[in-house]
Amino acid sequence: MSASLLHHIALLQVPLIGPVQARILLNHLPVDAIFTAKRTLIEKIPGIGEARAQHIKQFTNFKRAEEEIRFLEKYKITALLYTDARYPQRLLKIQDAPTVLYYKGHADLNHNRHIAIIGSRSNSSYGKEMTEELVKYFATKNIHIISGMAAGIDAIAHKTSIGHQLPTIGVLAHGLDTIYPAQHKSLAKEILQQQGGLLTEFTSNTQPERYNFPRRNRIVAAISDAVIIVETRENGGSMITAKLALQYKKPLFALPGKTTDIKSRGCNTLIQKGSAGLLLHPDDLLQSLGWESPHKKTASKSKASQQTLLLSFTPEEKLIVDLLTDQPPIHIDELKERCGLTSSAVAAAILSLELQNLLLALPGKMYKLA
Image 1 (cartoon, rainbow, N blue to C red):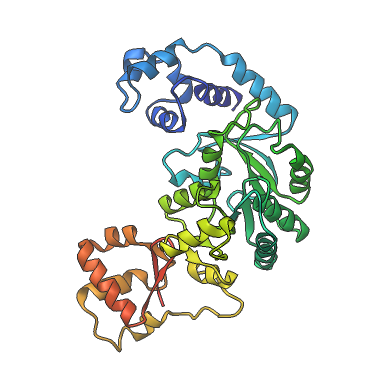
Image 2: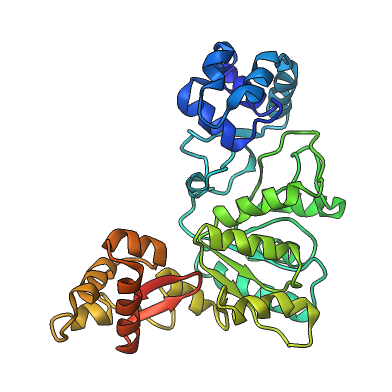
């Protein structure tokens, strides 16, 4: 394992090799063979090319990878290769999933219910109160909270989770040898003490550079079942996570705020454009994901499936109803692919089913039977 891990860490130290190129290489060659293969073989691999092949052949700094392994062993940090069953499986669905993650903690990265709660670093009292209420409710459903360890809403989400003995995972934009911001060192300790975890793709000595935060945000979005934005400006960092969540076909929710409040302008814009669902109560999210709500017991069969024998569907409508019966919400793109109909035929069938109150349109272009 150590030899394999050393080569995995070393591969990501090679110039011009990131998660995408590493996955391409590993799909063609065993990790140790990448460094011993002929340059002509490597450069012929689609997506690699001459320049990257040359950098691989010139690479000799295995000492850095050895130092990293000693750091991991000293501080009892787990290195998770993308082939490890403990690696967050949700993350593998994105193209640029890291081939190596570094994790300290006990929270299950594959827990069946993960919700990301993010927002402004300079939150308002409204944002603080709403975040606390959300986490308090999710704690009763054993829904683990994901966030980015930033000041403001992120920190409130983590701290409230700790207060309710709920595991929470902080995703970092730097190595595990530091905590940013520095005042969150005690928060990081409390997360670990409360059976939570700290996760990063960055090796030690990686500083919280500005360009690392969007990379951190993609992990926050990808390992979550849904993303909630509590407060954000129109150009806030949370808007990057919102864009990524939509790209990954994750349900996106936003809390509405006053039209005059600049800290809620990003949320209001996302809701106005239909990119994010209006979150008035956590039940909205539970219903969207097909999770049981304490106020509305989920029926054994949907309204549409119960009425299938009573209504006369067109062939296109019946196909969609059959695909969605007793199934979790499906993204419009997946629905089109699975039913094999043209976009116009799917749109017409969806509209008809919505008018019959048999189909629900959910945030992020997700659909489920009513």
